[in-house]
Structure formats: C-alpha cells, structure tokens
Image 1 (cartoon, rainbow, N blue to C red):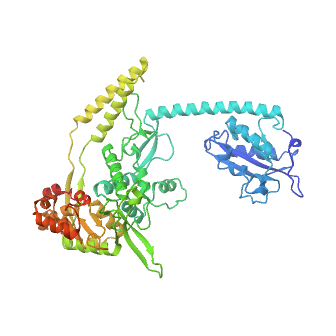
Image 2 (image 1 turned 180 degrees about the vertical axis):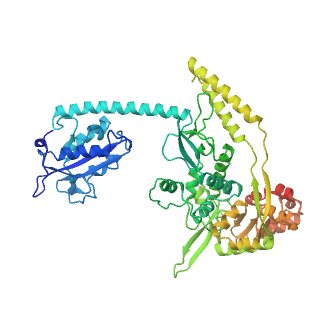
Image 3 (image 1 turned 60 degrees about the horizontal axis):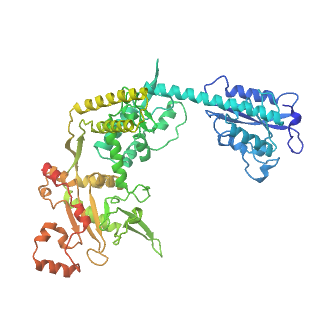
Length: 601
C-alpha cells in the first residue's frame, strides 16, 4: 500500500501520518511472532523514506486469542472508542495515556491475523475504518485495502486465518484431553495448596510444603472445631498469612497486592475436588474410559470424605447466616444475630438501627427478618438490643459462669459413604444412558461394559472397607466459662453460640403490652455443663430459661394435658386465649439434644 492512498490528518502545522501499532500474541513464549519482532516491523514500515509518518503508540495484547473481538481486547479496544464527540473528528485533544480513536490515522499490524482471526470481526473492523476515515495496513501482505480487490484478498486471507485458528484449537483440545486422561496438570497457577512439578510425561501436582498443611489446618478449624469461615479468616489475617493469590505473586517475584482472607475465598477453595487429588473438568471429577476417577496428585491434601465434610459444613454455615440472597452487613457482628429467632415465624432476627427524630441518639433493636424470606409474619417480633443482650449474659453466666470451660474435640472416623453415594449415582446414570440408547454402536457398547465392570468393582471395594465411627472428647481450656465469655468479641461470641446450637426465641407482647417474652435454649452447652460437673445440668429443664412468658410455657404438652379443667379455664381467662397450647416454634425448639445429654451423663 502507498501513502498516496492514505488520508492525512488535519492538524494545524503538520502533515504527519499518526501510526498506531497493533501487536498481539496468543502465547507469550512464542518467539516466531514475538512482540519485539512485531514492534520492529511496525517501526520499519513507519520509518520508510517514502512516508511522512510517526508512531504515536502501540496497542499490545499478550496472551490474547485471535478469536477475541478487536473491541474487546484490553490493548486495542480502547483505541477504537471515542472518549467524547470531538474524538470523532481529527484533532483529538486527549493525552497519550488516554487511548482514543481520534489520536491516530493508520492501524499497522505485522499480519492481518494480528488484528483478528475471525472473518466477521475483521469485516466489522474494515467497515468501521472506512466509516471513520482510518486505514488498515499489513506489513507482510502487500495489497491495498482502499480498493475492492484489496478488501476481497484480505477477506480470503482472513478465512484461512480463521480455519487455522480452528485447527489450532482442535489440536490444543486433543492435547488437553490426553493430558487430562493421564492425570497431568494442564498449566497455569496450581490450585490452592499444590505445586506443579514437571516430569518426563508432563506436569503433576504435589503438596506445597507450607500451604498444603495450611489447607489441612483450615479443614480442622472448619469441621472439627466448628469455627465459622469468618472466624477462620480473622485468624489467618491476624497471623499475616498471605492469600494463595498473593503467595503465587510472591513466588513469581511480583508485587503482593495485600488481599485479605474472606469467607468467599475459603468457599471457592473447597469447591474443587483437586484438594482430594482428582482431575476436575467442567466442574466435575474427570473419569477415564473405564469410569474410574483420574488422579492428578499422589499426595492429596484431603481425602474425598474430608472434602465432602468441609463442603457440607460450609453449606450449614451459609444456612445459619440466612437465606440464599444473604449479604453481610455492618451490623452482622451483633453476637445474638442469627441465634435469635422470631417466636412466630422462626426467621432469624438481626439488629436494625434508627436515629431519633431529634438529637443524635441511635435506637438499636433485634427485629424479625421475615421480609427476606417472603414470610407473612403477623407477630414481627422485636426487642431492644441492650435489653436482650443484658438478659442473655445474665442467664448464661448464672448457669455456667464458674464452671470450667471445656472444648469439644471431634476426631473424624473413616467413612467412605460420600464416595459410595457418588459411585452409585454414576452407575445409575450409566445404566439410564444405556437404556436410553446412547450406546448405539459396538464400540460404545464395549465402552459401556468396561465402565460398568469398573464402577461395580470400585463400589464393591468401598463397601468392603470397615467404617470407623467418629469419636468425641472434651478437654479443659484452663479458664472458667465467665473468663472465656468476657474475653470474646462480638463475632467470636456469635460463632460460639451458633456452633453450640444456642437458640433464643422472642415473642412480641408475651409478657404484656410492649413486654416481649424471651425463651432461651442453651443447646449443646448443656452437654458441656454435664461434662463440667454441674449436676443440675442433667435435668432436662436446665437447658431452657424463660423471661416474661406465660407460666404454662414452662410445661410440656403432656403436662398441660394432665392439668385439671379449672386450671385451663383460669389460664384461658388470664391470657385471653381460646385454648392452652404451646407455640409451634417453642415445640420445635424443644426437639432437644436429650439423648446427647443422657450419653454425656
């Protein structure tokens, strides 16, 4: 292409052609089309004596596929957009660090496939260039894009480039499939807790000496110690432990960004079964042609059972935090949040804040969150935060204050039930696919019988492994319960109460007008009290206290039924009810841990 076909910029005092170099590389290690070589080609074309041109910048895209639209590329995309209306004409006033379509006249690339390998995208780029008086130049393909013949030749070349892209993609897909079948790591940053190690047959994963044990420690805190994800993150952040992404940056000599551990990070870490040494593909554990799960590491951090336990515990923690659309709020650290529930609808109660109409006073109440769940709650319980927290502290210190604080230690047993269930599901799917006619050729039928034989053998192997029951022990921490309670902050208290299944029910006006009733159930703390030697704790009524509630709520349904008729009449008259029955939520709350308490005693 000659410069005579190019439109010169209308900038006062100069006739320079403003050149933008378009550089693209799919793989940064490809030396045949390196960024440096492409840069030299653009500079060589610009510096030709026959041209009055100057390079004003380079749009560099490294590790970017040719299938990506030019407008979506991080390097080139900004140069194809207008920052304001003035950019649509020559004479853009923006600085060099503000890429804009008004700053250049000629887009120069080493080859057309550096601009795009997609015929449709390239056609759109040509139309855009003609509309905005821009010229596209390829330094290797010698044709004039300002003529119809030149455009036709360019589009033919682009068809071959697109075909080559599809061929490359097919080769990569085939290669990745073979590596996946062999249990090899495909490249990129390894998953949390692993290092990638090159072998003669590809890369495999081994435990990272620091983060492998760290993942195991996080599992223990989550599953054994029943800590919340928030509390675990708090410990990791206080200890100054880098997140996995920052650790990888540090390993590569890059600047650490200082990201904090977050519950979402922990949740994402446990979603992949790579933690238990298996290859993942499309969100599922990858199986070979015989139906066996392919291993990617001979030194897995967790067993499959442990991985399954961690995910189930995370799911339980998420349920404790509320419904599926739950979002953390600044008031969520109130230690009775979530443990407190509405006596009418069972929805969790959270702290709401309201400023006084005059002055600066802030009113804080625990309120029913019925609106978050789409529940029609007639009671809509609420209680002042200070009143409920003072009442609960008095109750729990009165019950447990001088007792030695004990920590429950759970030692998980050996149980392959999760793997068995997964195997049976895969077997059922295999048989259903066979019945549906999906194995409709001799080769497919042979594959079916191989997979069937492999799966049934694996299920039989797992069924033959004896199950070892989980053991529970208790150890003294050296503190009284009152000491422990005083030392905990809001989040620690909230986590502790949830882990021990403490539940508080609040009933609007149960004790009279504007006198909310409160029923507190101490859950697993009753078992701890028995272990600590509090004799009264063995009594089934120990675990429940009531405040400003009708006296018959302290009875069981059987005890209420045994009362004489006169008693029922007095209660109906005094409390203005048609029938003496317990609230449904109170009955639900009393499906207690009595068997655990008896076992502890």
